[in-house]
Amino acid sequence: MDTRDLTEVVEDARQRQRDTVRWYLFFAVGVLGVGIVILAIALFVPKSLVPADQKWLVTLGGTFITSLCSFPLHQVTAARNRLGTLGLLERLIDKAAARGEPVDPRIEERILKILET
Image (tube, rainbow, N blue to C red; front, side):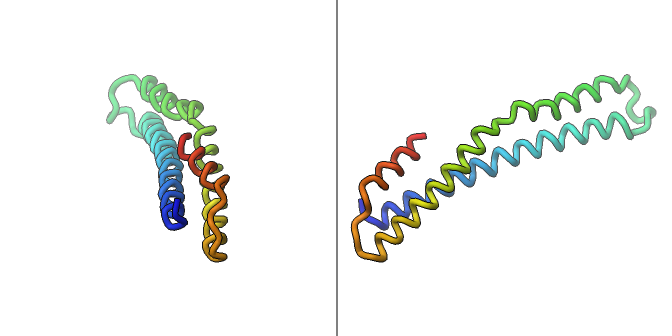
């Protein structure tokens, strides 16, 4: 594969990994925010505005907050690790291109292995 093509593939893969981490964190913050808002409504809004028993609101807000226990932290860490590895491989490709040498086939194999996961 040409050096420019490899660089484009690596940059595209890095962008996808950044997006993956960003979406996971956005989801976690969103779920936490919804839970906190529901709990705030249950605890701080006067009972005259929320006429029913407020216990179900506390339960619902707690459920949202507790759902963060199932947050896929291992997937986020794996995506960040792949991001770092892809950055290192990109630097190795750039160094080879600056010296005018062909890219080591092991680098291409490693990139393909990362893209498969």
